[in-house]
Image 1 (spheres, helix red, strand yellow):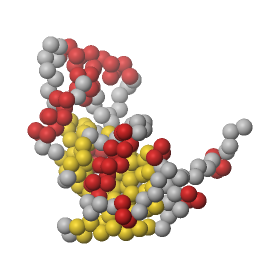
Image 2: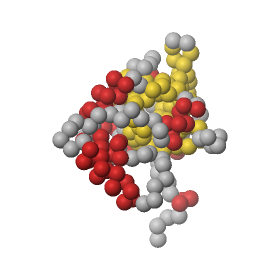
Image 3: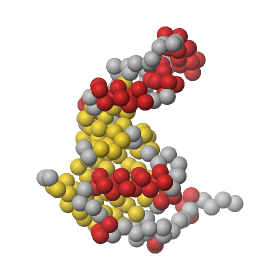
Image 4: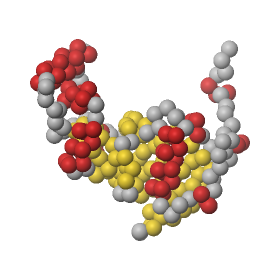
Length: 213
C-alpha cells in the first residue's frame, strides 16, 4: 500500500544557504536560482504562484509564468480584465512564490504591482506564438461561459478575422511588473533544519536576516 499522506517524508540534503552566499541585491540571487532551475531542466522553472487580495477580502492564488527579471522587478503578462487584473486595480500589493522540489528550494516575495507601458507589452506580445496571440483575443478571461464550444467558436471567429494578417495586441492584455520589497530564500535542510534567509528593503539598501526554520 502507498503511505498515507501524513507519513510522506523527504529529507532535504542537496544544498545549503549561508549568509556568505547572499549578494547585496536579492535580484541577483533570484536570477541565479532561476537560471539554475532552467539549467537543471526542472519542470516549469518560471512557474510563479501569484497571490492577490480578492474582492471578498480573501487572498486568491494562481500560477502565472515569469517572463522577465529586470533590476526594477519581475515581469508577467495577463488579461487586464481578468479577476486578478481587476483585483490588482483595487489593491496592487501582492505576494509571489516559486517552488522547485528538485532543487529543494523556494522563494517568497512581497511587492507592489505596476502595469507596464503599452510599448513593452507590444514587444512581448509580438514575440508570442501566433496561436497564443489568437488565444488572447478569443478568451474573456475569468468570465462564465456555457461550455467549451463557446470558446472554440470564438477562436474560429478570431482566426477568420486575422487571416493573412498580423495579430495586434488587444488593449485589454499586457504586462505587469512586481516591484519587490521583501524576499525570503528557502533552502531545504536535513532534519527539517532549513535555511531561511530574508531581504527587507531599508531605504536604498537591503537588510539580510536569518529566520529559524
